[in-house]
Image (cartoon, rainbow, N blue to C red; front, side, top):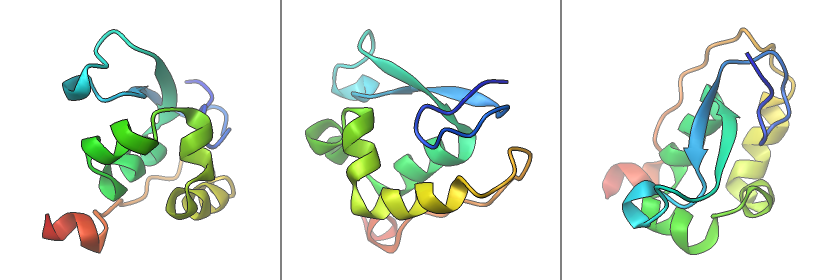
Length: 94
């Protein structure tokens, strides 16, 4: 159990997120510990190419319009809540 570096929720199970996707050369690069819902939401909204091009830092992720509304919502959720994360409509078409 730890603290999500993106939403700030505490006592959540965290996963390691490569800020620069591994397939884009980020295998040994910077990482962030994210709660599972935040991690899934990033990959549901964006392709690895988009993440590498414009969302490769926590500050860039937090300031992204689509992700910011999710972060605002998830902060209010209890750490034990498990939610379903679906790919965005744009991602489903790709």
